[in-house]
Structures are given as structure tokens and as C-alpha cells.
Image 1 (tube, rainbow, N blue to C red):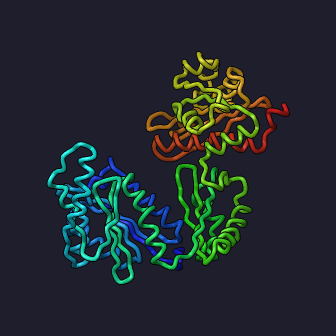
Image 2 (image 1 turned 30 degrees about the horizontal axis):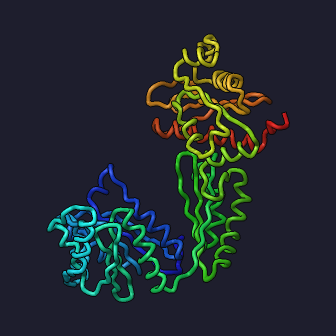
Image 3 (image 1 turned 135 degrees about the vertical axis):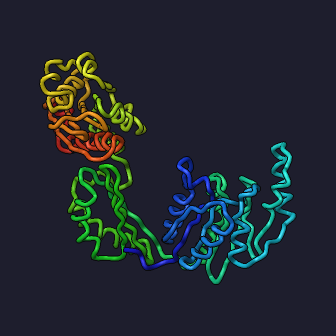
Length: 424
């Protein structure tokens, strides 16, 4: 449900390169975060190719739908940098050449011992009625305009240029122009439940209100609930968030693994550290991805002992001592092998916890009993060993990601409820 209060913003990212798989628009993420912090809702984003008429059309369309328009990119010196011209066309305005801007560009080139090309002259043109926004980090100045009470900002594309310009020039102007409400956000991250199951359980709670607004984001085995409240004061917004978050927390319980945006691996490493415990891993189908997720966390060296990458049956037997007859009888993808991998990893490393992963990630492999997507997870501690079978759907990348996600969650739940290593 959309929030009704407060001004709204739209973002246009200019650049044909961002319509290819190689380049991603990251500026809009930064802009959205900063605008949300001011209490401004971003209601639309789009990427537009370097074509004059398409940029002009996008500007006109967005101005109908928002109070604030931010345009990033297309302010450079090349032929395909057309943002200035397109915005002037959309607004029916001329542009004027500013010699002082050009001199500033020349000075920047002199500072770096390089000659300025004539192409840079186009960066000194300013739309009639626009305010120039200085750019000490590049050659392209920004521009700010007000049209019928609405604000338009033309901003450079490189992140090292747009970020300081937004913080120093855009946000202060936006804050002074609009009567802004207060926006507060809150996040739950959830493991062990699917998106539809989460929504079935919490929709009866969040659909009672339009403010706070609730958004559900789903990744492989990882659901995020985001709440945004808009109010006149911070205290009022926080009270509104608590009124929504408390019953959802009660409904989902320990399926919620983070309330501050931390990843599941962050949470697991923190729990291990709090217990003074260590973990080791044995991986087959995930090929080291589980160890990689754990060791991506700063401070993981205090809790991660190491691991075994045993992709073949020979390595399972040779490195971790799994009986070849056991593999022959039950298959490498089986509860029995998952149990042995975990137990033998615990014994060989001396860790407090050991995780194992074996499965068929696909697209090949699988048996009638264990088709592609079957994964067995093992968990060993001094108190004993257990294994769980999962049947995941999706391609190879998704199955492997789900395997690491559920392995981390299996360890998390053991850390929450199992016997502390210090008590053994």
C-alpha cells in the first residue's frame, strides 16, 4: 500500500550502456536512500538511452507524476551526452553559454597537465533559469531548476561526482523547498520460510494499515520485510513502526534472524563469537560457497576453522574417511554420507560445530529417489550428529544458494537452542 503523505520523487538514469548486461545503475540506489531519509518517497525509476527525444519524453512524463525529478548522467562532453539539450527541449527553454564555467573546466585540465578539447565547451551551456551546481570532482557542473513548484536536478553520472553534489547541494535545496515529514524504516530478515508462507502469516497484520507501508522482498531462501512510516515527528513514526513490527515479530518468532539488515552469515558469525565457538565445513555440491559466505564476514577468522571441498567420491573417502562401501550402498547424495561428512569434519578439525552439504545441483545427475535439487545437510556437535533432506527447485545457481542458506540457518538454530560448547 503506497504512503499518501509527503512529496514524491522520480529518478531517470541516462545512458545506453545501462541497458546492457555489463553496466548497472547504482546511482538510483544512493539517491533513493538519501531521499527516503528526508521523508520523500521515490515512486518511479527508469533508465533511458542516449537519445534526445527519448530523454525529453521521459522528463515530461515524470514531471506529471512527481514533485521532484533527479536526472543522472549525460552531462559529459561527447556527442551522446544529451541531458542538457533534452531537458531544455522538454521545458521549451533555450540554453546560454557561460564563459566562467568553461574557464573552470580549462583550469581543471591545466591542473592535471592536460589540454582541454573543444568538445568540453558543451559542458558550459546552462538551461535558461537554471542554477549551476559546482562540481569540484569533475568537469560536468550540475543544474537545478524550479518549474511550477517542482524541482529538477541534472546531475553527473560518475558516483564520485554525484554523491558529493547530492549531499552538498541537492539535499539542502530539497529540504528548504518542501515541507518534509519524517520517515522511519524498519527491516526484518527471515530464513526458513517461503515468500508466500511469510505473506500468508503477516498479511492479516500489515494490511490493516496504509502507513506504515510494507514491502516484501524475496531472494533464494531469504525473505526481507521492509516497513516505512511517515509522520510529523520521529517519535510518532517510530511508534507506528513498533505497532506493526511487534505483532509480526510475535507471529514469525525465530524465523526472523535479523532486525538491522545483517545477512544470515553475519548473524551466524556473531552467534558463534558470542558463544566462543568455532565451525568447520565439508562441501560437495556447493563447491566452497558455504565457506565463502562465512569468511566474507569481517572477524570470521575467530570462528571459522576451515573446510573440506570433497567433490568426488574418492575425495570423500580419502580426505574425510567416508567408507566407500557406505557411498556405494547409499549414494554420495544421502543422509548417511551427510552424517559421516559432518562427523568426520568435526573430528578432524576439532571445531565445535561441523556442517556438511551433499546434493544434486543440476542440471545433470539425480536419481528417482533423489532427483535434481535434492540436498542433504549434516550438522555435527559433541552432543551428536543429525541430517536433513531438502528438495529445492530452480536452476543450478539457485539450488546451490539455497543449500548454503539452509545450512547457515540449520547452524543458527542449533546455536540458539543447542548445548553451549562451554557447558560440555
